[in-house]
Length: 266
Image 1 (cartoon, rainbow, N blue to C red):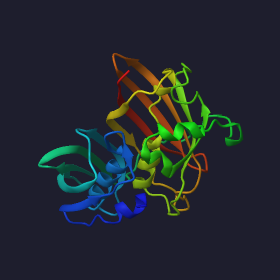
Image 2 (cartoon, rainbow, N blue to C red):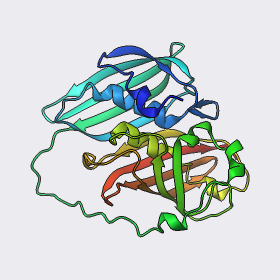
Image 3 (cartoon, helix red, strand yellow):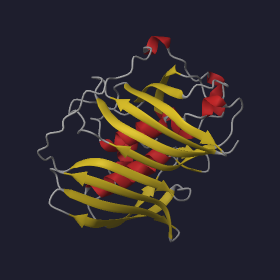
Image 4 (cartoon, rainbow, N blue to C red):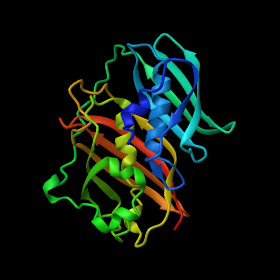
């Protein structure tokens, strides 16, 4: 089994390179989007200055990414005194299958300071729903790399029609300091928030994803820690869902604000 962190470790500082994508991380007919997004982030990261912090990362899942060879292409679109914008494309069979834009910025003085967003008072893991053993056959392959504790909303395909979904999450096998790349995997590991509304399994996938990082991650944070996740459906109709989510670290500090457009085939 190839670990998430082992895939990211194959990426070098070269602006153009080819890496091998593993099996064991399937998501329907494609590779897990959290892994491919993290690959794009790791490639972009080599183009930013060490003192710059990633503030925003936008991904368009253009086409299904397959295990095997993939070419990574990085371009610095603009490098200003504070902000750097970097694009990354993943290419297979001469076609772009994923396009990403990473925006980095250096800290600067400001009179505006509002960093007290409270963590939600959601039930603890002792009150969580778990995926039942019979669901193993229909869960995407990548989900076996994560632990979930659902304490907000209901299980996917349970017919629960609340507009919130979430709980707690962690990597099952990783024992690494948490990075943005690993966090991307955790956040995207959650099923789309619209799935509990359904009563039978149907395919669903992310179309676009923008995730923002207010502050650098705590140096003590680990991939094996439990992280808190709550997604809200803003609007869902006509086979598309528009959702936003907030992520808190083990110290209840807001670490990510995520927005996705998802497609639902049912």
